[in-house]
Image (cartoon, rainbow, N blue to C red):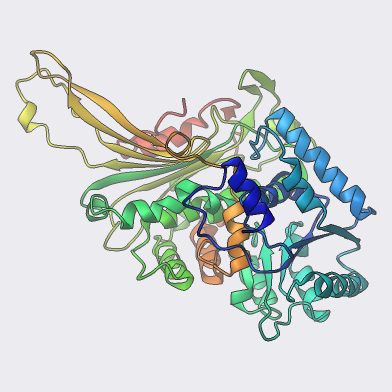
Length: 525
């Protein structure tokens, strides 16, 4: 048992279920963008959580690299201040109520920092020398995980520079892997170009295109729910399911990211990656095993089966919105066009809702509705599956006025769990029905450790399990599906922005999209 595991055992936080999970192999992790928000708010807290559950090797080393001139001590001190701030403020994805000082000291004692410009080949030469110094003296084994927590314009630059410096070459018994954040391209053409560029230096097995949504317990549990239960998989098809709604609503605005968001928008930011990954996990065919290629192959197949839209269909089946001033969680907020670095006449969407169809034997005829937006009424990511309504004939002549549909709700965040809505007879002499809910919440059933969603993904990178990461064909299939919408919107600018109040449910056109089919969104209350 390592020092970390021994600490967890004595505090009672190392669960019985996790005790057999091996410690990651010896490795050095290099974070490009070490001074950025992603490193501070998500990656570092996730590494800390991995320390507290004893999953990092004793020889683990963390190297930060950024343009800012800092010493190693200044970098680790800045991360310490941010961790304490998140604990005291209770905001963000890191929800621990305190910092275990021995675990945090274990991590900070392994941190070093290299200052450098990512466009300068000398930076990568210095990094190589630094890794050679760190590795032999601490038993790193030559294994390196390079994490690109930088703006997407640097992705191909960093990969090319790593290759030119000889840092991506894998020798016998050693691995070199690169983690790439989103956005992976801005449209189909740029995604293909980026794939081609990084594959000049790396092979596909070295590339880990990360999406932190896939680190959520509920997302990982979708396959277990479907494929480990004889109850659900037989009815997981067009014969029994009427519609699927996937929602990713946020109660935050653009958060000082106006420059980024103006070039991106809600569609590019969320749909081809986050939302389509939820869609793929929900609708994919059963893989023959949990092998990474088997799972990723089935996910790619179902995204490729999305019916292509004509320009007219794209305009009819995709709704865009932009938030106006309003009140979110009791606080007044300004309109998107008044945010810093946003054009006063901006036509960038902060909301997208669309209807898709999957043309395969399992899902043909089942509408898939997607929606995601900023400054919505509530923060919620969920997959809602509505089953076909039971026939009314049996209840004619009773007090039952209508049959309510059955829903299964897979809650991804913030309250991870699964709910099932079904009808029961209300007590009494008359035949009346009530809809009741069976609800499973992870936090009440399991003793769950705090998680940002990155813990599982970082650990998987270290052990070489690519199951939860996107492959090149998966990425390109996602962009292929949304490209008709991007093209249609580019040729038809919106004339009604802003068209929804911050703190509301989104634009009225999104409700009309479902009303055409006789459906309605599940409420965000």
